Image (cartoon, rainbow, N blue to C red; front, side, top):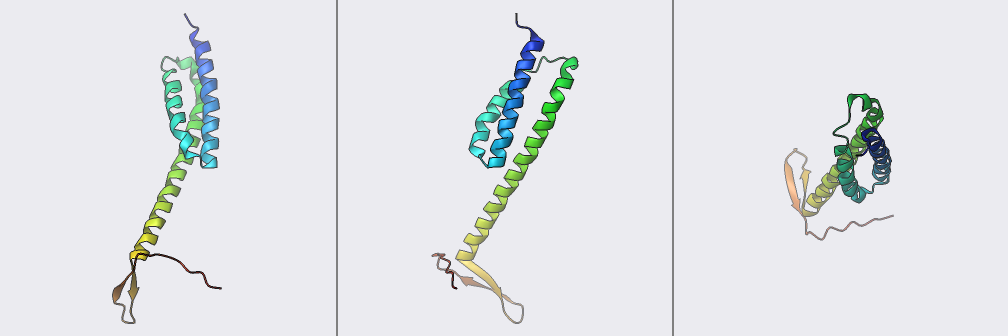
Length: 121
């Protein structure tokens, strides 16, 4: 039979290394690497299901890393949403643009859909 505390030490070390890799992937913007890491993280965390209250002190630093990585992930998602919104706004401008006349009445100017920008010096 395996020694449970030793097993947990191995799991905690692997989870610690994985959380560091996940953090680096988030900082680098390598979001494609996050999916497989999530599966590994879930498997490692489930291996701690039989941890005793005495082992809680060993788990606390990992909880801090998990929270830190979650905040980074939330920020990455917010950035992606901002980009998606900006692209949607740009698409809308290509289709039509709302303008206001001198009296404050709104009018739409239809676009041709070609959507090219010209930079002039």
